[in-house]
Image 1 (tube, rainbow, N blue to C red):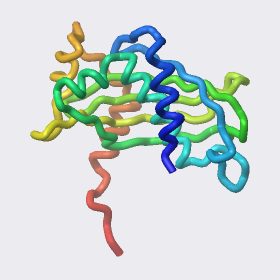
Image 2 (image 1 turned 90 degrees about the horizontal axis):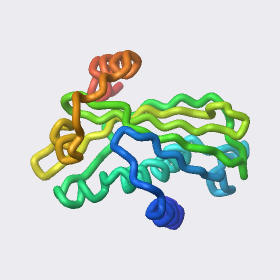
Image 3 (image 1 turned 120 degrees about the vertical axis):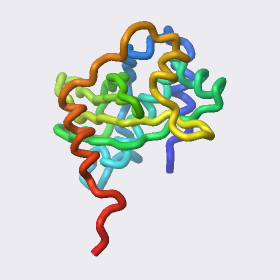
Image 4 (image 1 turned 180 degrees about the vertical axis):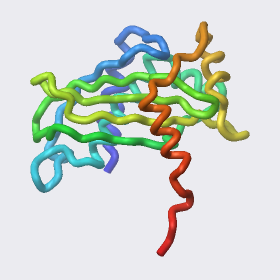
Length: 178
């Protein structure tokens, strides 16, 4: 079940945090609870994605994105994701999550998030491709940046993100059926 109470708590706490810019990093802290684990008593891979939601939503609130979406009758959706798991997160372990927008292209906004252990090791990292949508379809990221009153050129995407988008464009859709 989705952790609506945890989400409400994180959003409530973010009200008292200072505003951040659209490209600033949001840092949040989380605990791996017993209901987050798999049979090996470590953070379940599906729950990892849910915890990343709990980092993105307060970031969206602090940056003003939620207000922008509501005012423009827009929505936001995940259009793709790539996760890299490197260290186990055990039950009751505390983690620091870092969430930020990396940049955008003509269709999508790219975000990265990572979970860090107290030892300083990065446990996992996710790259997300997001689409802001309206009743007419995908809202161009430049229009979203304008609504944010973002000044200057869009930040360039790192080569590794560009390589990922190129690889994703070659992936067949719909998937092949046997």
